[in-house]
Image 1 (cartoon, rainbow, N blue to C red):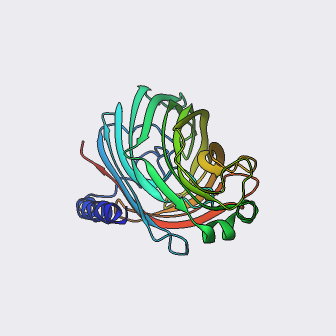
Image 2: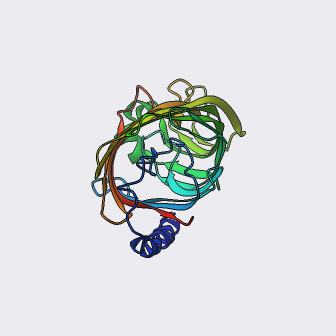
Image 3: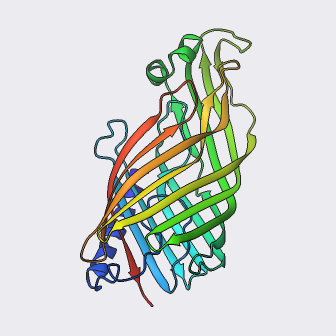
Length: 303
């Protein structure tokens, strides 16, 4: 994963060379609502042909050492295809490691003045996510589960979401976005070790059958640009996560919540510096997973 993130980062930073050659039209162009490409709030697709890229890092996160990124292409205000490297499924211990994602968004109704834009989207992981939680992970983050007898547990998980999004601009400096869809989570508990019976065999337990769960996926976000060089954004959304059920001591797939607030500083060139604070609340047994990310992003207009 880290190798893929490094390659993505190199590609995106190379793309900055082309954005330096552009004149800054962002300072005179009407605000389009796309403040931060790091958030998946399905904003209205920009007209013309454009390449959007972003790279971010969490400098204060002691649990992870990953780069995050996004590369997307918008075509004539109709279609946007994206490749991203970001966290999508929360772990029982709260940690969200990034994974590769592919997304398509098709604009059905173009956003005009104060009339909302309507689009449909599909986003899926390119591969399953595999995790193994050992005794130290469980003792640190899930002591109740650990003392009930779970010493090691591993699982695979993947997810796909499809839905409809709305984007509107009640003011030139304000964009509001919302999405509603269905998310499929597929997971399989692999090898696990239990120290006590608890209706499960003591010792190693063989992999269980694959399971599937469908849930409602939603998001609401607002982006504003109170100053020419400064933008702010806020978002709250649903978030899939894997959990260890407190009764059965088996891996279960559930839906939690994620929230983000951030600021964006527009540089004289077509580059932006993004700083945002993200938290993910999976369940009442866990404290919110909290992460601050710092990154840069740009939109390269072709036509």
